[in-house]
Length: 322
Image 1 (spheres, rainbow, N blue to C red):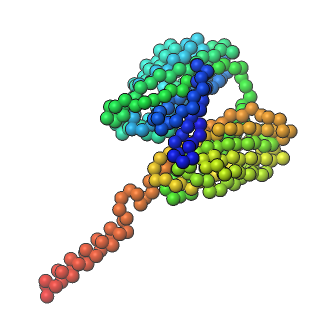
Image 2 (image 1 turned 135 degrees about the vertical axis):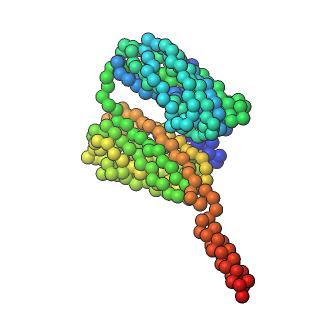
């Protein structure tokens, strides 16, 4: 996924695991995309899977069905997501199928998780299942919303060592402000270098600067020549180990409303011997908030008017007493 540099519209290119087909989707036409990511876990483990939404706009109600192989996974529970905490939920868990219905009086907007499902892994090593979504939604006026779904795949693998993980932190800020967004690493061991490509919405954010994080004692370079795309190269000959910040991106907020996904489109990690290391990533979201001045009139100006009015009343009263 990337953002159109002129319109800021997110473009999704992806493969549907169930069908193996390739799509290049302009979200200006698809309004809303509902997805569940592919993931894996070990036998007899517990795993959480979020159902996520992109580009939601005034969704008043929604029905979602998720199907899967009940010999591989057993659903334990379902919780609301980060953008549906105020929604009213009804769900029904059956072997191999979960039905979800929700209503939101204020409308669901933006990007984030709709629901988080907790599963027990009951299959054997090597087992797999498709995670197939179907959904329909209506806006606050009860008009149907065009929506695309992206399916996922779950696989069972024997217990694996913890992968190096690179995470972009969620952040928020008001128009005209400069906000620091850390890039974090966990489970690092002798990481010698890495290349990261991050995409963002250039109609909402502009890169101001990029600096090293506390955990990075080596070098960092960045390329912002293409609007909406930030390329980072990090190197430390002594090796990065543990968990912490490896980079901090300072963004200028250039829009009064909206949100932008902070997507790690490409991640390559090497150890100190220049051997590639398996790594995973987690994306973030930036949300534009209202500044204090946008919540109403200017308090100072209103106070001046009040004082001037009070002086005028007092002067008039004194004149009448004379």
